[in-house]
Length: 498
Image 1 (tube, rainbow, N blue to C red):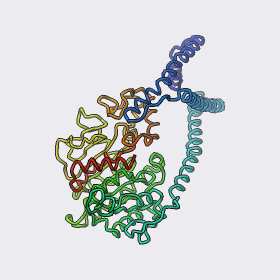
Image 2 (cartoon, rainbow, N blue to C red; image 1 turned 90 degrees about the vertical axis):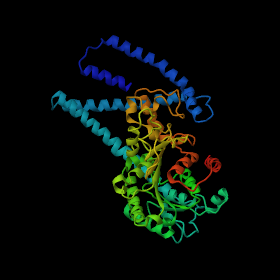
Image 3 (cartoon, rainbow, N blue to C red; image 1 turned 45 degrees about the horizontal axis):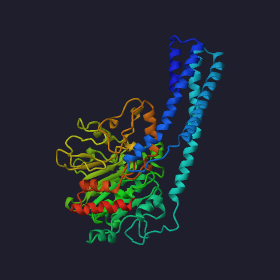
Image 4 (cartoon, rainbow, N blue to C red; image 1 turned 30 degrees about the horizontal axis):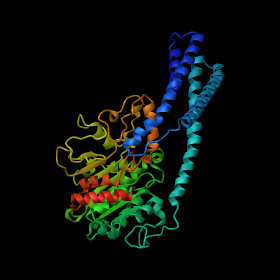
């Protein structure tokens, strides 16, 4: 409807011939009548289309998509937007009428339009949107500071938040306390492999631990030195998601693969959910990731090469994008870190975008090959890391991504052209019934981004532990393990997270 109104306005503005009033009214009525079957067909087919998505994700089919309720909600949204547009028009006409008394008609029109846009932008962005963000900010801050009655500081002096720690338990935030309190211990890892194991080292510094990001990064390094993080065989610098959350499917599997002989460190930069953090404070995550990496890397490069751990980077979602931004090639080319695993990178991720756009011709966007695969490789539900034409170089970078992840594959251009990931061959987790439509597909993907974590694990934006295992083995080269044990570990971890 909005597109039709715009075309009609443009037609009239260009002073093209229009049908006389009676015929124009008949055309509008005919258009509305013809639109009704299209709406009815869409609502009738909704369950079938939804089930085509559920089928590729292994979910039970729906009996109904509730077409009457969906239609009613859609109608209410349309009427609300229409009322808003009409209000905009009324305000603009009132201003133009006042200004025409003082200015030429065209100048009055331009000025009235500009003033109306400014007024509406000020009200919605400066008042409504600002108040909504303040409410969200206070809610997430309260949630982040909440401490469960059953949550107590660890007794182990080598765990962050203990009485001996440089970081207080209260300052870790909800996600930090969750990360430190969870995860496998040496006994669990040893029981699985039937061999001795170590307690993995986890260091986490919350947003409230120190005043500035530089002070928090320094504190993280001091805590790492206190607990002996640089004495392990592998060290991972993690950039969490917007809320400070670290995916246990990624962290736990890595610690199992290395039999606990590994340390990780993370720095919280926000307590907002990732999409809100990206909207409100887009630079905070990159700043925090960079501050932490520089502190860790400076100490790491000062150690004798034969006596220091292998150094890796990891991030999921917004954490993947900010982990990308935490360093660049020119800083590390003389003494590079060993590798990185970035899962579900947002579509705005710089390195991911470069490698995807420069993919080998003929490889799909959802599973590209970048050059000879010696530096960057891509994988999905099915392990694709052996598809490279050359062995690994000095740095191993792996992107774990699903074709059904809208956070990764949303493109603003989807509003006016079909994205490459929808072309044949499609990913196995993308419905074959999905078709591209101008504007509609862009709106679908935008909505899907906000609902991306409602998919079953192993699809959408929820990454499964068994897929992490293949990626971690390729990136970090843990102690050798036979194929049967890997299969058993995948089944064990999959059962834990489902």
